[in-house]
Length: 124
Image 1 (cartoon, helix red, strand yellow):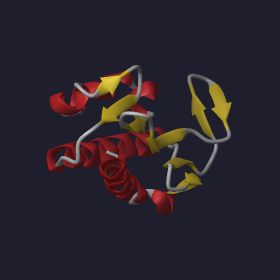
Image 2 (cartoon, helix red, strand yellow):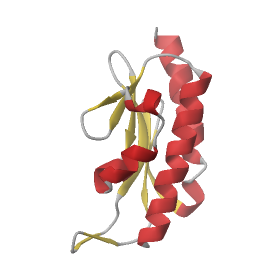
Image 3 (tube, rainbow, N blue to C red):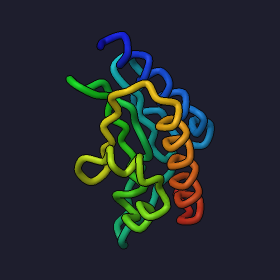
């Protein structure tokens, strides 16, 4: 299982890494990878030095794909693939347990939707 999870982590990390040139890496290790905005952002009238965008993190029984755009803008959930939404546990963490090509495409699509929203909001 550990080998499968490291492969899943590697593939999700590669999908998130596409956005690295416009965002800031906060963590990059064999256990996880995190991207944040690289500039200040105002959300609901409050200024933050940076806003979390997305991450992949090794957990005990899954790889967590953390996707903050749906936390900031819950209406974006309607744009995500229903099969990906079935993996959502909590507010913004998707539990990825299988090395599955369709799931990677759904994550890729979600990242583009989220990045486009961050650009629209002026956070990127």
